[in-house]
Image 1: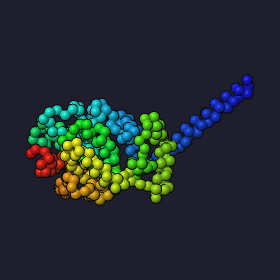
Image 2: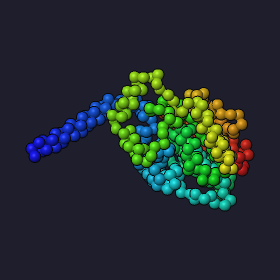
Image 3: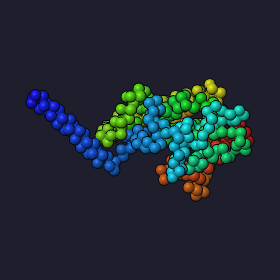
Image 4: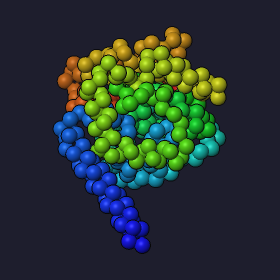
Amino acid sequence: MNRHRSRKKNLVYAALIVVVFFLAAEWAAGLALTGQESERANFGYSILRNTDYFIPDPYLFWRLHPSVNDEEERIRINSQGFRGPEFSVEKPGGVFRIVCLGDSVTYGFKVDNDECYPALLLKFQGNPEQMEVINAGVPGYSSLQGMRQLERDVLSLAPDLLIVSFGNNDILDAPTMRDSEIPVYSERIFKLRNWLWRCNLTQWIASWRHRESPETWSRRCLPEESLENLRMIDRLARERGARVVFFHPLHLDGADLRLPNFILPSEVIRLDPAPAFAEAVAQGSTMFMPDRNHPTPYGYRVLAHTLAEQLKTKGLISP
């Protein structure tokens, strides 16, 4: 009896030692990460720390949390999981439906619901009552995530026109492996993986690996992968009867030639808001946030107006 009790006590002590060791390692990793660029090593997965706006998704990695209405931050995510007002999944008769597919620039980084370019695009039309614009942008999305989102969640909306912009996230360092290498896990394994990525210790290991082995770094999407993802977006949408247009991601410092939109095949339809932005910047307008990547509210107005005019010129929407 005493031997059994002693063994049980030893097991309890061993479990306590493991717990204390893990907590100490977690605390130490948190200190080590303080002030470091850990976000680069964990970009995308760290976005899930904000559980108010994002939820894990085994196929898309993460997606917007449905039915969020944050009046203080001026963010509304409808019950379908898209930013903006509610809409019917089945397209109403006589309505021309536009879906804007993209990342945080499409989503509307740090601007109001009605200041995103998809919301403004509707206001620049002559017949807004016969048109519907859906904002399918999700912060942090790569072209692979956009292609998967289109396939699973957007094609069923029967868009007449798809406006696409990806690229900024494709060229970021991959956390541990490229997007295309991440397996599509079962729900249970994905929850475990997501929990591990919330731990400071896991983030520190990923950050240390990036710091110590730069030769192993890779983009989230290689150039050929980005090109194939965008070609697939174009093909999937056109097979369902939608017209597709792409526009270049915007940068205050000029075009980044690594972005996949610059290597798209010539047959796809492209819009180019960059000259309008350059002209506005030359005139002294503040077009970008301090990150030099995301438009200001005025920048979004210029973007929406420019896209609307170019769409009309190309005959893709009515004057």
